[in-house]
Image (tube, rainbow, N blue to C red; front, side, top):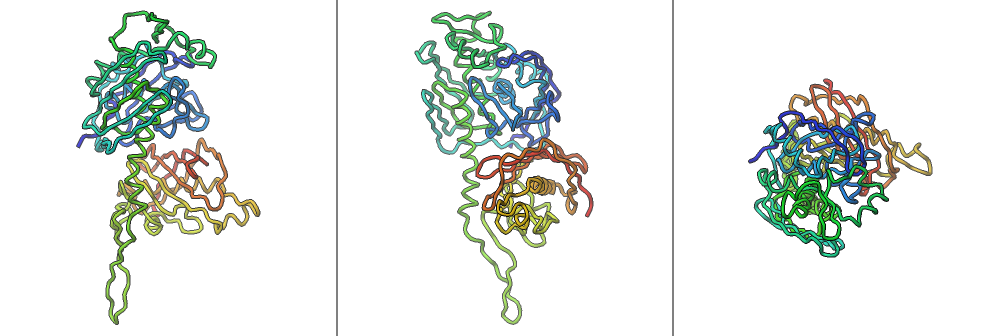
Length: 469
């Protein structure tokens, strides 16, 4: 089985952002297995991070913008394409502005720097996702589809609305073909689009140094075209960067006609939905537990264990650390084997997903919660601090993956970048998603988000310390 990869050493590059026009220094840093790709804004207090994931896409007008709350990173697709093309699964992209440098409008410099830094194989296995059934979508003039395929192939047709400069290209994407056939392709725009882009506050850093301009039948560029089909090859470059937001390599054949960042990211979301569907189906349609009975003297019976095909087999003597495994789901009784908390201060009803450094749990918020009696009479709202507590408890569960942490308590030390966005009321199902960002010795750091019906209600970065009970 292939293994995850990160960079061997840091990389630094400076330039300006295409759309925002800001001077920026970007540093790519190695990152631990399972941490994925994430952007870190050094220019903001607390150096907040934004994960390169589909759920963080906030804008796709002429580029892909990621955001969490008020923190945004613009035009992420070129550096993400360079990392994905090189097979880098885990890295931190540090920026001292809100947009990576545009360089020459391609990923050529990024690909060269990543090649010079080298890649390092990590201990955790890499799990590419094999497309199982075709996915197709149409958005305006754009058609996107992906079909089962043993490798990663992209077939693309691009043109403007008038059919000018229609180009076609198809390629099996590998680290080698990425560098030679795609990474040099520069971004481009049509002359009549420039006025619109400027009026909308875009391309402030644009010039013929970092983009090709097409005017009527003329191609305005400061150097000859690097490929005969440079325009469509850049569209494929964008697709690679946007599809990396799925969070794992894809095995499939993408077919795109007039692609856009909006369509690319919508396809990424559809792929992620297909990835999650079997797990959700297993949780929803698993048959009831089969109760095995032990016969006791005098003919009495007592349940000894339950078997459920959707979850790992758990016995009463199973250590806490063996409960917390990739693919496991935990019910309330199993959660209480791991956490010392008990009602009314247990904020986790069940764990629905454990995958690497990520965990998702659930809290059913009922009118019977004791805090509703005084918070507030006639207008019940779940206290925000209890949502923070839920994040900390879920992070504590994930820390129990390590055998040396078994039996320890997680002490809440601090919370940063805390935001409460919407009230949580009786009847809501609070989903708590936590991703570990650091675990060293007794100190753990995690990023958590609570949602209700898919909408964010709170989020925070938490730090905690493990101590002996």
